[in-house]
Length: 274
Image (tube, rainbow, N blue to C red; front, side, top):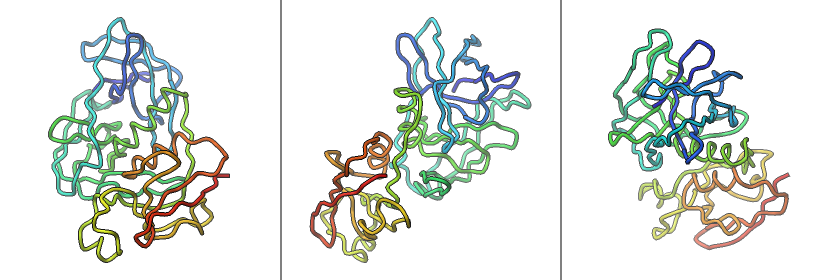
């Protein structure tokens, strides 16, 4: 964890990428103004610039050029979390009293859909940040960050979502999302009775099972509940993070070839994003 100094207040952030010249830090977008600095654990302070922001996830990436190369925070894989697993909510310092705060809890839901103008995946836990904190991180017991908590309500954006968004911001300065319009689940997370009830091939171990399609979306009328997405163009889709990463990076207008498992058969169809 590092601290982000915006105005006279300290907020929380973590290093997601660094190279010989730059250090990139993820923090809350809604708290970052035009003047911002990064405070490292040694107490050294360096002016930073805003690389870009993702208002949907309420994250910003800021960058500084310290005279040293800092280590990125260890990142986990959100999909490997299970309900009932212990996690730690950590905030670097509370802006009101400058004290570090932690909370131990368990996860109750993993990868559930948070709806708004778009959809993203979140983790729900009873490891809540204390009121007055300005966000923090959710870690597994190995010390890896598995989610970013912009608020104190016990919900964290999955680190898979944060990582994909931050990588695009670092590369392009912004996030571009193509929305497919499906609510899906990882086939790898389905129980045997769910596979049987939904008539999925028992040897199908990867892919994104479509629970429903959203009206007036590219998927509506073309993809059906019960389909399993296993490919988009030449990209293999094993889990929802793969699908989201493809959609984050897709900016074209040409039809996308979607490879599906439907009624036990492998088929291909086209989706257009307009």
